[in-house]
View (cartoon, rainbow, N blue to C red):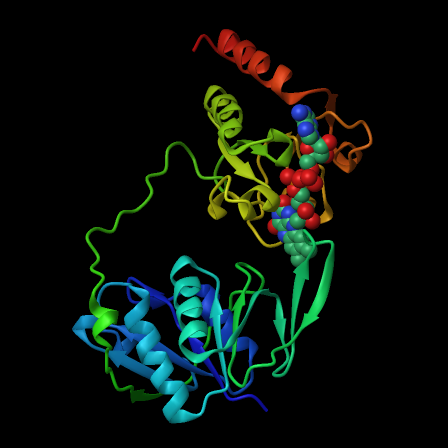
Length: 309
Ligand SMILES: Cc1cc2nc3c(=O)[nH]c(=O)nc-3n(C[C@H](O)[C@H](O)[C@H](O)COP(=O)(O)OP(=O)(O)OC[C@H]3O[C@@H](n4cnc5c(N)ncnc54)[C@H](O)[C@@H]3O)c2cc1C
């Protein structure tokens, strides 16, 4: 049986939902909390949790965290280290892979203690993945595990913090939070969602302009989020958010089942797609077959004219 350590990412004094999901997923997994003033975060998780609490770990930088985890792996004999997907987790996992010569499987949706499962080929198949290295690293896909509330007393142990010289060279200069304009997709009455049919990230401005004219919010499919065209927070579907606005306008979205499950509760669904056989038309109230690049700017103009904005 694997001896598993889960990196517990935290924000404002609480462990992130994704990390809790990974910890709950693997029977007998231990956790590690890393930061400054973080010991109390390790409480109440019902398992052994290492606390690496040191002011040099205050900034969420990856290399010092690689040092802490690499030492735990060496000293405590962990053979598996798992992460929930995030920018920080990806940086730490990549650093650990290099440091330990360990294999890293990315995008996991399952792990049974030996093998993992991960969607591949643009999510058309789910394959079994394994490791050939003695230490196994894995990152779970964002949103692939249900949020869980863990309880029970943690056995909190202090982890040694011995940082390499090169690990302290980077300095966090500033941390900023993205400002959100307009309603969130969970709250909006109108959502304009963009898919791969937009063609390129810049064309999301078409969705943004239409959403602005309608006083709505912009959502996206998994395909475009994975491609880095739009932030993950806008993803609708099985591994994203579930929304139920009064009006959902889908631009260049094929209507895959994993997208449908996140938006089928919308009151009125309008789809614009150039393929008359696109599955989205099967569950749309109004379908427009045509090139969105020609249709959407005109639609936005009409809405503006009608609303006098
Ligand atoms: C485990 C798992 C979880 C997943 N979770 C999600 C999820 O949460 N959310 C999600 O969205 N997907 C999810 N997916 C992915 C899903 O299967 C699809 O791959 C994805 O939804 C497709 O995105 P898309 O519609 O943007 O792209 P595509 O399927 O490539 O569709 C693009 C569409 O645009 C149309 N088009 C192209 N050019 C134009 C044009 N000029 N004008 C008009 N139309 C045009 C095309 O005809 C096509 O229908 C998941 C998959 C798996 C396996």
